[in-house]
Amino acid sequence: QFQQTDDLQTPDLRLVLRSADDIHVVSPPPWWNSTRIMAAMVLLAVLVLAIIGWLLSLRLQVNRLARALKQHIQREASLEQQHRDLYNNAGVMIYLEDENGRLASVNPAVERITGYSRDELLRQNPEDWQLTRPLENYRRWVNAHRAGESPAGFELEVRTRNGSRAVLDVHAHVTAPGPDGAGVLCIARDITERKTAEENLQQAKQALEDANAGLADRN
View 1 (cartoon, rainbow, N blue to C red):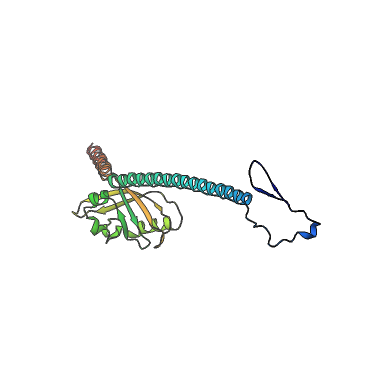
View 2 (view 1 turned 30 degrees about the horizontal axis):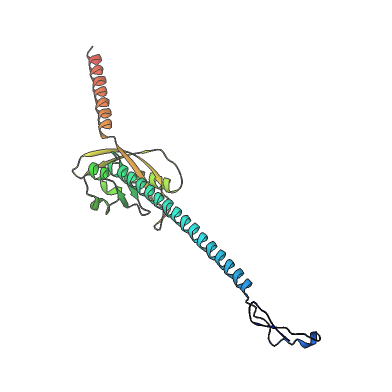
């Protein structure tokens, strides 16, 4: 049945069905309709924004960790430089003996007091400094430290390269074990002048006692 309207001048088609059986579905409508496409686009946009936010947060965390690591490295480098300066400028001898008793490290004070160069010292052990007291005493003292004991300081008397005498007040402790075993770090203070003054005083005291004894005998 067709009806012609006056305004649009287009045919008006009306289908009159006898029953629902007159409707046959040839193909179902597509699943992706405009509503679902819009919802998917919104979900995708939210997901993209979430990923961008996560990446920005991750970048901030990485930058924060990088700054913290840089500051830590700078602090460690500063401390290492301070320790190196202290080691090199110390007025006392600092030397490290390895597990075989050989010198593994020496500071400039060891060179200055003994008269040997660093290269020469690193081919030596303290016994090569021509100790004027029995070697066994010093080695026994070092081995006591290796055994975990804590003996008092040791007075080490050596001959320097030019033949002069040096008296050292040595203290030590065992370092943490490394690939070559535990070493012994020794710090030695040069007390030669003090010992010489004490000996001179003792000699003067003995000479005075001898002189007084001689006067007493004459009387």
